[in-house]
Length: 470
Image (cartoon, rainbow, N blue to C red; front, side, top):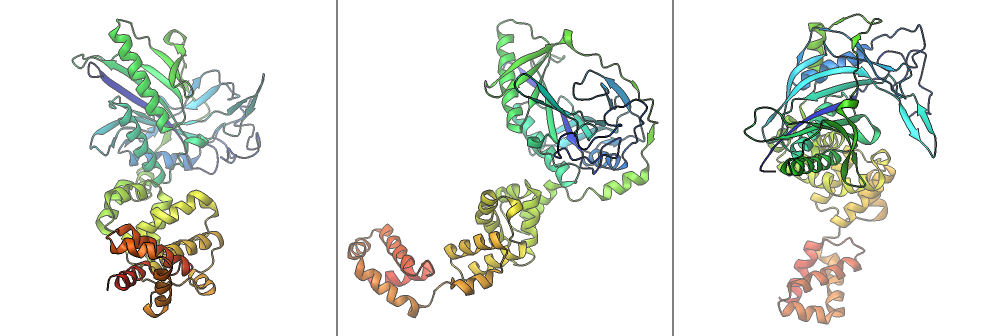
């Protein structure tokens, strides 16, 4: 790509975390049985009137502030006219001339700032389910509050687009604005990409890519389109402005429609909704609701808890996990040990069982880490206790006492096991005497086996070495 400069702009649609829809009182629960959370307003019946959801306005203002935008004091809604097969009234109430917020920025980890053109509110469409030879429509999603975040064309590579989306998702999640779950459709993205010579002043002809269902998909689609356009320009072809779809299976973009087929949305003011004022009181209240910036939290983890930069990134990437880590640190003042257990054995349990089935509390995790650090449980037994507490929620100490899992560290208790191991493994003893370091670990393993996994491996090794090489 050295012959060309890549220009990318992203349009991100985010479902707001409200209890009801944006212009009616229906529950904003798209996972309910099909067509159960609907009413005459979101179904577009004649004569009905929309009522603006104040919670959607508050979350939109919060998003604008989180992205360092200028929140406009007066906003209005307009009708965007388009044939939506899954939007019964065949127009969308959206914003165009007077959006909620403008002129923001999002800073990447590299330090580069990506401009935010606008943040505006609108209603979502429904969902089509295509079967063999026919289609079904579910209108539960119709009217759920949607926020569109449009970036400036400041992104210069597929990887930067990936980084932008990753940081945007964290900002919105930490501020409680949206779940941002692409699998559930609460975050969707369209990407615009063009190429130009580095010395050219004007931007190249762009292609818009739709059907992007993951951050990796965005990065892969942009990488493919970047290569396709560069090859076309190198061969003297003219780039046509068009909308393309990302074909995941074929790993390529395909044409959806050209510029000649582009739609004229014929925006005009929504006659059933007045202009709305965004008060200073609302702005100040939402400033107080922003909470801690995720990247400030990441820096605080490194500074205050002395965790590595890498571990801090992993923790903060999942707010639930970061909250769990901090709560665990309240119960055991060795955050580096807590971090190791959270990102290691605990995360394995979460991945195996699913976080909804985990019954272990932050206090429980801290207690298990403390039992391990103080030598009362070895690593194997501590993991066993962790698994049982995750499944049952039972007190860790009670499990240890009932099942006799406490680590055996006393020399008197281990002496017999050490003697038996040496007697039964003469070849291993010979290897140790010949300088084979791996052989001693084999013998430690035999002691652990004889003790039912309860022996202190460090003490066992010391006793074996002393007995074999006095």
